[in-house]
Amino acid sequence: MAAATLVSGLVVSSAIAFAGPAMADEPGTGGHGAAATLGGLTESGKIKIESDRGDSIQWGGLFDLTVEGGGSLQAYCIDLWTSTDPGTKYKETDWDKSTLHENKNAGKIRWILQNSYPQVNDLKALAGKAGVGSLTGDEAATATQAAIWKYSDDVTATPEDPEAKALAEYLVAEAAKAPEQEEPKVSLAASPASLAGKPGEKLGPVKVATTAADGTVTVSLPADAPAGVKVVDGAGQAVTTTGNGKELFLDVPAGTADGETKISLATETTVQIGRVFGSVEGHEQTLILAGSSKSAVNAEVAASWAKTGPVPAVTVAENCAKGGVDVTATNEGDEDWTFDVKGTSYTVAPGETKTVTVPVDEDAVYEITVTDANGFSKSFKGVLDCKTAPSPEPTATPSDTPSTGTPSETPSTSATPSTTATPAPSTTTDASTGTTGTTGTTGGDLAETGSSNATPMIAGIAVALVLAGGAAVFFLRKKKAAGQ
Image 1 (cartoon, rainbow, N blue to C red):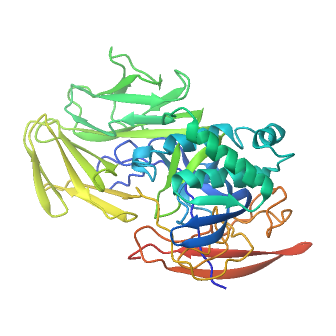
Image 2: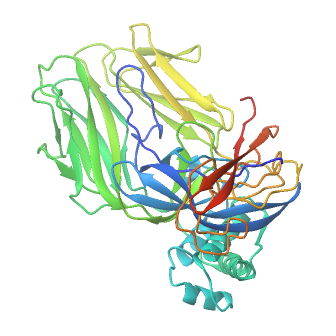
Image 3: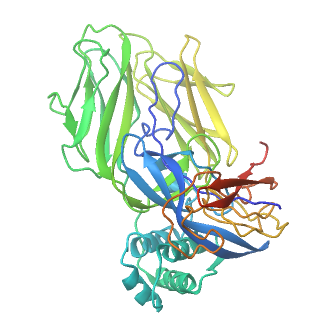
């Protein structure tokens, strides 16, 4: 039986090393925020999708993620026709660097998240608003996902369950007339993500943005940082903690040998509802935050200094508006700095900054390396994911069993219809109906159903797992993006 997959994504942060190759998970922002690993769907159900390519049945619902360093998150999918897998690494990112780029309905999605399950966990009260007698967790999660897809992917999404259908209709209607919602704030970020200067100077400033309480963000340097180098505030006082809106500097004493280090920031905070999580390593489904425990978040800033010559600092930032990645080079030295990107050379005068936009294909995994004639080399890797994938051509009859990792269950509209969009529910849930509460996920591929700007290529694999007391069949699907 042909299978199709649907998508979902999450958060991960990493640091940009100043010298030598570096991997940037959130280019230009110091690997800011929360980083997490996708578990699977925990509560879900069947949703009928009506799109310009035909109709299909998908599984949709609530995902769980485990935060690196401690904490847990819950999220919904905002990229219906893209797949994802349990174990996928996700990073926190901004709306304008995600599939919500230029989506005028982003605020409506956030309203749904704030006014539905699991933020509203009083299912009796939620049922009353929807005009039904009762709701289960599966029904509430299915309804919430269906309402979100209406605004994230511009499709008509209708849960098969009548109670879930009623709640989805209520959410869509209320979101349409709700006041505009602002983008939620980043959990932790430090900008710029790279500093440069001369010994005897204070390098900076670095601006801190966080939702954590003032004074709870720890600031540190690595054990091998040169003697005398320290992080200070604007008055020159050494600091070990900081907070939102504060400025930090790196004090490098005169006479310090040319070198480099990094500033690490860390704290625990509740990530705000509506933050987006994108895949770190490849094109996977994009997720939007629906719930958060107190979670570990991090940011890093690279720094280097030299007595004479050019002293460069380089950062990158995904630019959805221009369809590429901005490479920003600053020269804090006393000589011109000439660097090379993708075979083209650019020169930055002392004290100046130059930004170059490198074109990158949508959904493409990119690697951009900045070099100079003196051995400088920094590499940045990431994924440009600014658009939701188009609906695939329907090809087969969807199955009734949800896949083990993505939000929808059996898309018939993906390149090849399949039954996986959401991770399979635990063995205590009726996988064919999704009407009972689930107790967890079993892992496995999340459903994939199509790809963005690509010719749909989807394969279905059915794997039967015999569990104690019964058997659960999960359909694993993996979508392949164009050119891959």
